[in-house]
Length: 108
Image 1 (cartoon, rainbow, N blue to C red):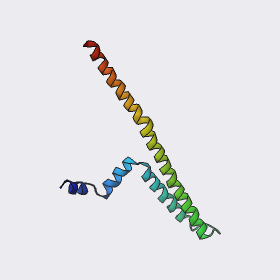
Image 2: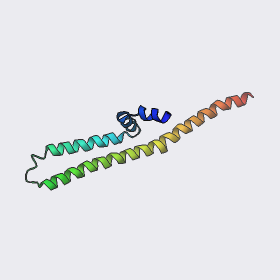
Image 3: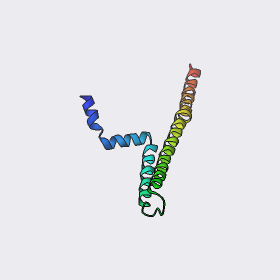
């Protein structure tokens, strides 16, 4: 019964929002991709004497480059949080715990 509740609890929108909070660079990459594609399609009329295939290839390369850049920044940010911020917080918590225990030991 619980699995049915969890399946009903998460619809498409809330699942996307949950994933966006976990990995904020995914929606940024998607937004950049659609922005570049939309802009380049808008500019399709005024491409001059450039061939259609060349214009589409440039659009694809720019959009993919933005997505790859967003993914790279996301991975670097995730590694920063996991390997630098998290150990610092754990160390601070351990130091505070040690400071709290030390006075108690002296009183005994």
